[in-house]
Length: 324
Image 1 (cartoon, rainbow, N blue to C red):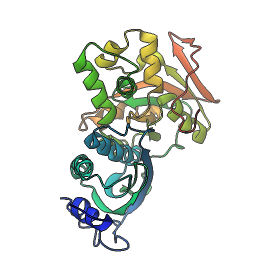
Image 2 (cartoon, rainbow, N blue to C red; image 1 turned 180 degrees about the vertical axis):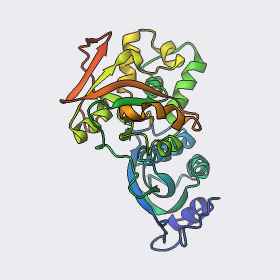
Image 3 (cartoon, helix red, strand yellow; image 1 turned 60 degrees about the horizontal axis):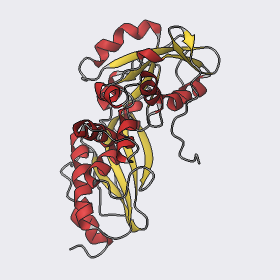
Image 4 (cartoon, one colour; image 1 turned 120 degrees about the vertical axis):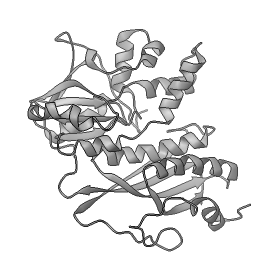
């Protein structure tokens, strides 16, 4: 049994299968030594998940680990970056080794899939929380950002929207489903989203702006609008909804509202100039990910929701970490 912080690190975090050639020195020293490829820029993102805010304290640690790493890799995907390294700061009330073993199982499974090496971090005592910093590479000058969009660009989203919110409602006991398989599927989608890494890479020369959907489409799209100084029109009937979401919420308006506000989807929202619209399907053909055009950017500010050309008076907002 591990008896202290260094024993925990040695037992659980120094045994990763990934061993990248661009990591001369990883865990075990005061700092990691890392090498950025020539002609690449380094993309870096940090995110924290806190028990009681982002996951229940008794949630399956395999799923918690996957969610923690996937949410960070999704930030790299949104910029078209290739994941490379990650550091982990883990705070725990006590050194719970069964929990740690399961956490590492989920964490390293996803890290190995994307060839991401754990290069350092910290473990300390306190309320359960997970902070990750991911690093990735993007070719010089090709990173996707939030401020490259122009009026007339088309708005796309990948995958389906709304499933994560539905899964969270099941987890929190806010919705009871007789269909237990449906309930489990939605919970799985809440925790086990796949970051759209290949999709982001494929869009580097096609999209004008991009971000990942972590706080809900109506909230996250607003970041592109603010950075680019534009307004947006969303045609709600074009929003991609899964059969499972439609079964969870048969009322179409409520299902669409879930799709607009659901956080922690980790799908991509991106904008495409008119001249590149024909290239979207070709660019994504090898990724296995679909993309749906749901609206267009226009001069002005704010988001207008339309159905059959008519504005909808839906007062919606995405997730706010500091909302009461």
